[in-house]
Length: 109
Length: 120
Image (cartoon, rainbow over all chains, first blue to last red; front, side):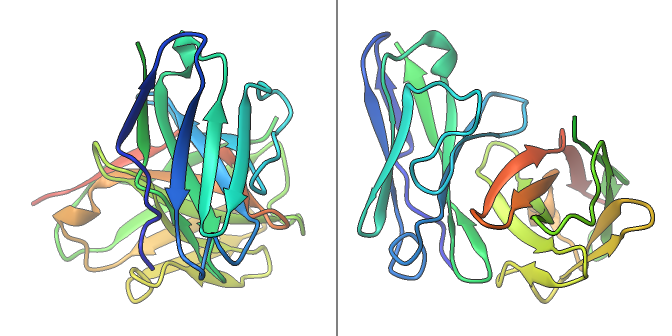
């Protein structure tokens, strides 16, 4: 299995919206609505931000939203804040296994 | 509050076997709703799923690591373990233990992570 494809970096100014894409194949993202997104600050463990493509765990800001179209999932962060600066990883079920994306570094300008 | 804590050697020699244990507190590892597993992150790189285990002992492994990985569970101790054989420098990483919600295949709890360095 190959890693899901994410852009290496994205940036935005406070208050703006950004979208991070996550492209897989018909064997993972395209076949299952089981994409999750994780936020990771330096030196910390990842934190679940989105599951089942678009659902937010309790306590996660509604500024974070997810969607999927075909083999590509997306994470949108609206109203960017300084604390959103972090690495973001997508993850998909791939039939008895799980595959992560390569990660995207979000810089808040 | 559920907590997961990794333990094991921080330094392993090339060709030897890496062994880590995750101790779960604040909840039972025998829950039917979760898998328990391992995820690693080489320094400065992305996350890689290693594998997961159900409390009954059913296992699921990353195909690229399957020949070298064994994950086991000890429900009496509320622990699960990772063994990775024939390690090389490429296996140097922070190793996280984690809980995955079965229905939605998402990791909702992570350990703090432990750095394992492969070096002679």
